[in-house]
Length: 155
Image 1 (cartoon, helix red, strand yellow):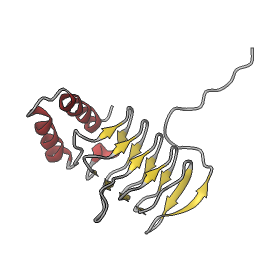
Image 2: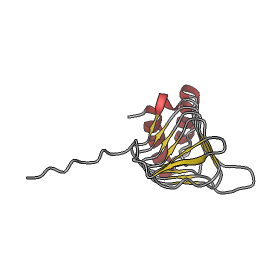
Image 3: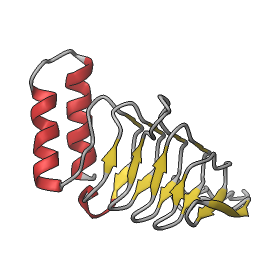
Image 4: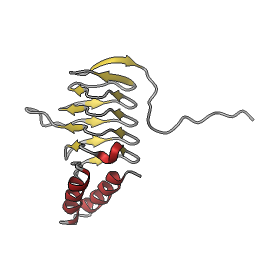
């Protein structure tokens, strides 16, 4: 299990239990040792992984990230000036190194965001977004993260 995610889950659980100081200490520990800003108030789903120990990852405190996502290093998921809303990331999403997902954006299930892409608008499910600003280059792709499809065995 990813150490950053494990520490986030611990801090998130303590935050839900309204423990006053420990979630903040865990946040600063992650910030100092992993150079990642993953607040305990964010909602991050199960089995989400942060590649390279989450080095340089910055996540807004109100972001919602689904299950089985893979987030590479130097990724920013946060707000944008003039908007109160923050991104909502679906399940089984891959976000490449250095990508930025900013503002009121919804990323669909199984989407792939390329390295260094700047996502400022919605990304449909099972599509690939690349570029600055990001544009959809492929749709109906199979997700590269998440549970493996089970083989059907005839008996």
